[in-house]
Amino acid sequence: MSGKAMDMMPAGTTSGTPQVLLSHHLKQLKLPTVLREYDKVARECARDGVDHPRYLLRLVELELIDRERRVVERRIKQARFPAVKSLDTFDFTAIPSLNKMLVLELARCEFILRRENVIALGNSGTGKTHVALALGLAACQKGFPVAFTTAAALVHQLMEARDEKRLLKLQRELQAVKLLIVDELGYVPLSPTGAELLFEVLSQRYERGSTIVTSNLPFEDWTSVLGSERLTGALLDRLTHHVHILTMNGDSYRLKQSAGRRRAAAMAVAAEQNQATAETGDQPSTV
Ligand code: ADP
Ligand code: MG
Image (cartoon, rainbow, N blue to C red; front, side, top):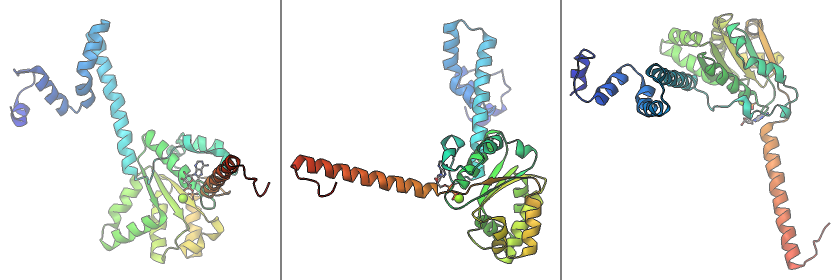
């Protein structure tokens, strides 16, 4: 029977293999977990003497859990994170300047409900992007639509949209997300138009949605990126009105890790040499 023919058939008046029809109806109702699990759960329930309402309840609960997981996955995809990172893999002891309690509090995402902003400032490699990604992930898991971008990519996107006469649409999309993450403000100086467009996005979000900005530059140097003192003042005024500042100055985690790896490699080579020396009975030249 074709799908079309079945679509036209009133439910409950069909003949034929019930499994085939059930599968069709469950697909139409968008209940993939019920479809996948109903047989297995039925056998479990029969084995355990579970009655029909409880059988149905089990199935419906499984569908709800799966649905929530699918929604979170979709939100993560839509956020366009360059990588999925969480606070579980973040070593707070590596960056003592960072207020751990504040980060954990922010991960509860109440700042998003209050439409507050977060600015992470610090030199390169101190985990700013990692923390921003982790807060973004937490927001997705709590049900907020999120968008991740870098300042340079966002400005590029805005300029392109303006040239193609779809700036308004893009601005609306950017306004719609509850959390916008603008990473790496400061690495690339912006053109006057680029700075204006970025300013517009951030001021449109003012008190309407949360924004996380990360930068390697202290506030007093933002003018070098945005070009104009006036624009920088106006942007900081809006961005910092309701803000949590994450101070992330310290050693680069990347460099520390590669230094650690180099040290470990050097020690392994030394150990190998010592072993070779011991085996050949040669005296090591130095002690
Ligand atoms: P930034 O954005 O400040 O330049 P990143 O967040 O990109 O730094 O960090 C560089 C790399 O080091 C990333 O792979 C990140 O996951 C890792 N990293 C940085 N700080 C930490 C930390 N405290 N604990 C675990 N990983 C870290
Ligand atoms: Mg970064």
